[in-house]
Image 1 (cartoon, rainbow, N blue to C red):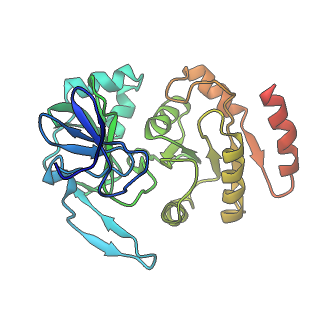
Image 2 (cartoon, rainbow, N blue to C red; image 1 turned 90 degrees about the vertical axis):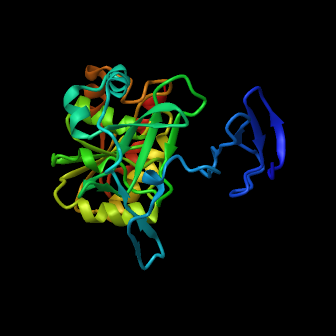
Length: 280
């Protein structure tokens, strides 16, 4: 083995990743199959399948961002295992159909394949969620991080920005507004460019990050207000310890959404008072 082994467990060597060289290694190499995966940078020493990682098209933008598109021709339709996994996450059949989930199997493990917007049976991004007993929770496409969940947009008056993809899907299902995932708490420059391209039809943009993200929610909301001064910018603040949207009951999700805080360039000083009330 050509990797620096730091420690091992019964099934894997834990090594320094040759790609990111992170000082806190999470590069797991299977003792049985020799396959490796880094949980920091998603580097793998055996790609799951050429259908997932084949770059069919590339486009270089001014920002030197390379966009990839992935063919879905070899990605099967959603099977019973995948449907049960999504149902267990309390997603309705309508939302499952809208997002066009599919099934896949890598490393002999079943996954739900989550595509971004599909055009001509291709997508620019995807995430796999492992459905069984596995140390792996997800596998993310090796591509520039986009706004994720565009496949689920149906054209409501409001667009909600969430952290994770299942938070966005759960929120969309429960409060019936368009929701997308930032795959984090802030907009990247690429995501900002994308957002400018889709935001025109929306009257309101709502920041709906996870619980205990008051400061991040406020910073993102202020940033959006600068980008889109003509739009209503709002925040949904979940109290400390509250579930994320995909775990909330529908009534709770609706209640939090209806109590969102609306910002403008003149009322933001009142935010600290509201925040202090929420924290009590």
